[in-house]
Amino acid sequence: MTDTTSNKMWGGRFAAGPDAIMEAINASIGFDKRMAAQDIAGSRAHAAMLAATGIITDKDAEAIGEGLLTILSEIEDGTFQFSTALEDIHMNVEARLKEVIGEPAGRLHTGRSRNDQVATDFKLWVRDQLDAFEGGLMALIRALLGQAEAGADWVMPGFTHLQTAQPVTWGHHMMAYVEMFGRDLSRVRDARARMNESPLGAAALAGTSFPIDRDMTAQALGFDRPAANSLDAVADRDFALEFLAAASICAMHLSRFAEELVIWSSAQFRFVTLSDRFSTGSSIMPQKKNPDAAELIRAKVGRIFGANTALMMVMKGLPLTYSKDMQEDKEQVFDAADNLMLALAAMEGMVRDMTGQRDNLAAAAGSGFSTATDLADWLVRVLGLPFREAHHVTGALVGMAEKQGCDLPDLTLAQMQSVHADISEGVFDVLTVENSVNSRMSYGGTAPAQVREQIKRWKGLLA
Ligand code: ARG
Image (cartoon, rainbow, N blue to C red; front, top):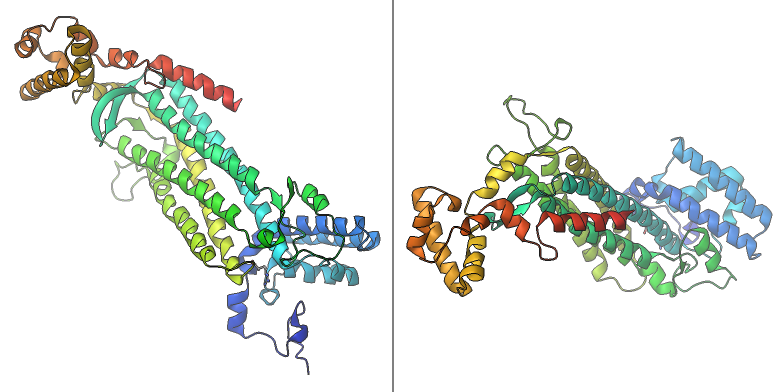
């Protein structure tokens, strides 16, 4: 006796339906319904191909195609009834198709399997995310270019070890992030180009005996070509891992910048004022304006990197080809994608709206003996001292200024000459931060002229 509760899709050999716990652990519909549009697009392409190759009739293909569109609108307007018993988006759609169009629905699954179906749906979903990722990065880069252009020649301290190192320009600092997000952009583009092969038609794992046309479905879905190995096509999830890896690196970049914004917006630094639109207040301390968006961006890297690690762990021990473990790929990617897009948008908004505090930046740029290297270089260039000796002389002058509680340009010529007799008046020219940054004209250096060159180059690249 066949239990009528056994699964309609694969229950032929089953006498009983699943235990409730089995159903709970097995079902993915709770999350994979996010791929409904991709699932329907894949099925429509497959049905059209089945008709074009004469595997099903045009009439059946038409009924399937239209039925699928009806289902898509039901899903979009929220009237579709998702069922956990039907496990996943693929079987939910197919079962509903049977209700909508009847018998022809049963012909849709000819020459395919849920294994190539899920790989296709998920790839299409990830591909959309890569496109959104690209758009988010370009918007952020544009916002950074705006800041860099406005403050190409604003001086500020450059840091190593978070200790004042040498004066740099605000524009140069912004452009450093343009380079980082620019590499993220190229990683996204590389990943998209590499992943854009269609798994559809790999069927369960071995291909199919039906005379399908994989080029046709690949083209209909915007893939460059069909994946060349059916085993790989159903087993591969490295397209998702590349997305997560690129997302992790980008989130790390976002996090470093977020950390700087937290520091820069503090009362101790006052390098930047964040707009009210991207700050929050405190419920108890009326004076507070908190950089919450920056802090949350800083934290996002944890969950995005976590998703990457989790999926690596899921995949690393799986024999070819499909194993149900792979169903665990989606929630990680969905969560990472949602949070990455949010973080990118929030960073773009913060950067666009923030105000660099030019005077505070300039005041900080001159403190902390930031032109000590310029002084040492002057001793080499003008007095012909070996760099090591110049370093030593400069160190002595810094010590002297420190003891007097002043900066290097505040020392008198006589005081300087007490350390090295040949020092002359001309030394004062290199001790100003403006001259310091203007002199850094080496390619990629911090001089405003160099920064403007790089802004021009990036504008050309984004045009
Ligand atoms: N829900 C499944 C997943 O997300 C679809 C593929 C099921 N394939 C199978 N052979 N059971 O991975």
